[in-house]
Amino acid sequence: MKKPITILKQLKMGENYKAESNRYETMKYNRCGKSGLLLPAISLGLWHNFGFADNFNNSREIIRAAFDQGVTHFDLANNYGPPAGSAEEVFGSILKKDFTAYRDEMVITSKAGYDMWDGPYGEWGSRKYLIASCNQSLKRMGLDYVDIFYSHRFDPNTPLDETMMALDFIVKSGKALYAGISNYSPEQTSEAIQILNKMGTPCLIHQGRYSMIERTVENGLLDVLETNGVGFVAYSPLAQGVLTDRYLNGIPSDSRASKAHFLKPDYITPVLLAKVNKLNDMALQRGQTLAQMATAWLLRDNRVTSVIVGVSSVKQLNDNIETLENTVFSEEEEGKIKAVIDLM
Image (cartoon, rainbow, N blue to C red; front, side, top):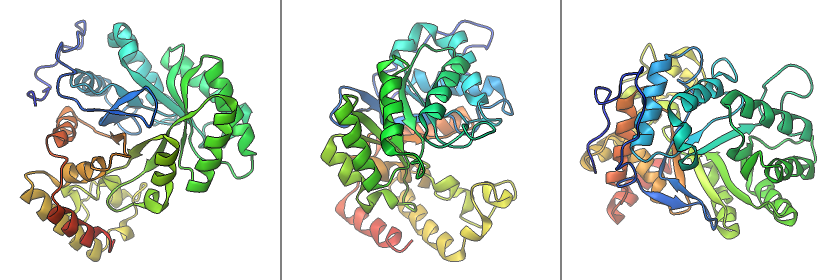
């Protein structure tokens, strides 16, 4: 694998950006289900660290460094920030400054489903909300279309036909190239796939939370996707940082768990930490960090098209991409790891 991109290598922010000529030589690309679309094994998520509250130049450096190493898939949603919507605005500004010439080499996604604006039309899965949200996202990013637009979560109070009709309209009107769903159960996913197939707008991909700790998608969802030729992209592969070296000795004062933001302190139990430490020892034996092994563990399954990583620095990005140097597990390694995670 070629030498990682470093911050020192990056062009000064005032200069014109020119992508690395060898950016596609070492990244692994996987076919998304049975479609014609390939996605990089490592994708960049902009859920955190890319809003107005974050350093613009740092965000810009990360996106440049990602693209320079073959990361072509950039995952957003209408409410990413903070504040909500700002990640798309920041990303749109970076696109305009650096990536206008590379738009057709990028897969840019957005979603709608969670709370975005006040009133009865600002969340869930109605046609009103999804189409309005897509239009707003395109405006924030300065794009004519996104490559994938997702229904971000199943809406129990809106007919699934209506939600899927909205995705069908978004694709057929040219606002998105593909339709996707996120956080749907196996049964909901199967029904959504059938509805979209009848409309002539196949479901390209499902995005779901998946890690060594959070394995709900193994409850039949991955089987449904494989049977129907639909891709799967995993988010939160490190379980909000639990599957890193951050929590090996307890809860750091500056961690997400200490702030009870998304990750609750009472979740980090001594029993969990003991198991994470066992996994860390196994990772070190493989010559990887725990985070790298956790990501490699997901990619060993050929039903997983890509893993979305969130990073706050170019170094973190490089560490994630380095995962691809070793995604193979021996039978002995698999057995030992399963013995630990099956008890989580």
